[in-house]
Image (cartoon, rainbow, N blue to C red; front, side, top):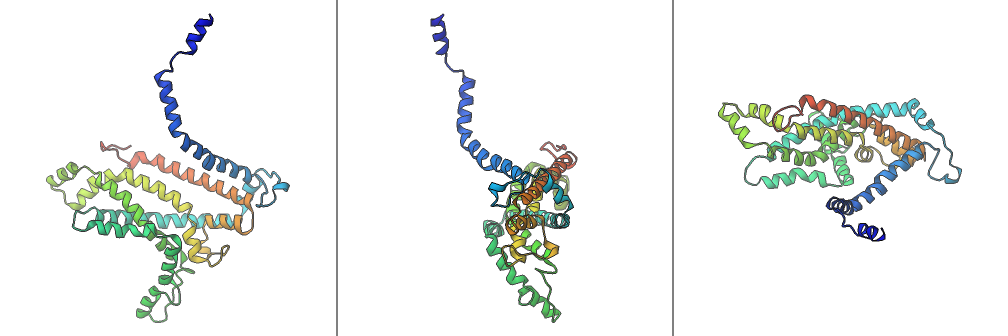
Length: 313
């Protein structure tokens, strides 16, 4: 029996088990990073949202349960900033999608020097947010901005507050412009994946350029459009840097009410008044809203997203 046990202990490891070990060995760096920098911060943030933590009171920490969440539902600032974020998303996302697709269509043309134009179109996406905002401030400043100077040539004395009274439109222009390059690249990849034989078949059947785009290119692009909508929706709800830098002059300054977005309120609650627990509760509520909206978008894809075979997904 002892010899049999020794033989069994020496039995070679099966191929499937070796593959499993190799697989986990290769993904272990990512898995460790995911746990340390994603799972743990999320769990820690949720735990903080159930306390009165203000960034300093570690030794006087009290468990308050759902109090922070109940407070959020009764806070008029939360309701206002959520509504403004919905308006921001409804304004930014469609404009960004349409303009990104138009740029991709232009960049997809086979003409001499198109690589230069693709590079120029993409440049706004690599400009740091601070530089981008200060450049646009030169254009949109109320009293000395270039845009108001041009408008004043036709209507003397005009001074539109693009970053105050009309901040939603002024900051939207910044945000859309900064994201066009990244959106164009994704759409361009999708356009180049449209089978040439389908386009040629449509042209042989007598379809003009518009009909080819509407009946062939656009349906084949719906998976890419779906991806862009989901990612754009998540990005729009998390927008903070551009609206905050464009409309405030201090680290805890208050932007105009028209551009007072949800994430700006979260930033002020955490870093302005030190309500870390309450701010974390607001962030978890935002996560819940984003998950709900993303789930809703995923549920609609069966009606308009097409597979390569031309059938709804």
